[in-house]
Image (cartoon, rainbow, N blue to C red; front, side, top):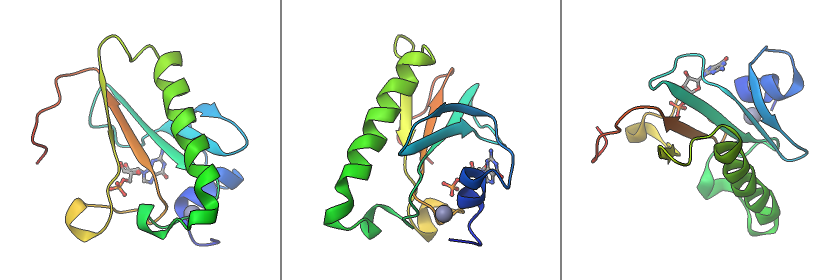
Length: 114
Ligand code: 5GP
Ligand code: ZN
């Protein structure tokens, strides 16, 4: 989508600090980190949210989950633990309507989340 911030990051029109990229997925550092490690993983195809991904696009979700696993291994987050958060809709606090997963690590993460 032409007016989507994350699509612009994928297109290189907005700079980002990339930590992982393949054909399907991009992972970059969050511009406003809320944990010592705060990464944002996005599928390169624009979906507004999980509930907007059609059944015939599930290969993108498989690749997305694989990229999350690769990223947490490569970034050495496995031993200390990490949290993956996907906000969807108003009450969740989702600001960017391009499906994305936050990867949070490096401190104790409270539960239940606020
Ligand atoms: P949401 O609230 O939609 O789940 O999370 C969106 C996240 O994207 C926020 O944590 C915010 O800091 C991050 N973000 C928004 N715009 C940019 C940007 O231009 N660059 C980067 N690196 N992160 C962004
Ligand atoms: Zn987008």
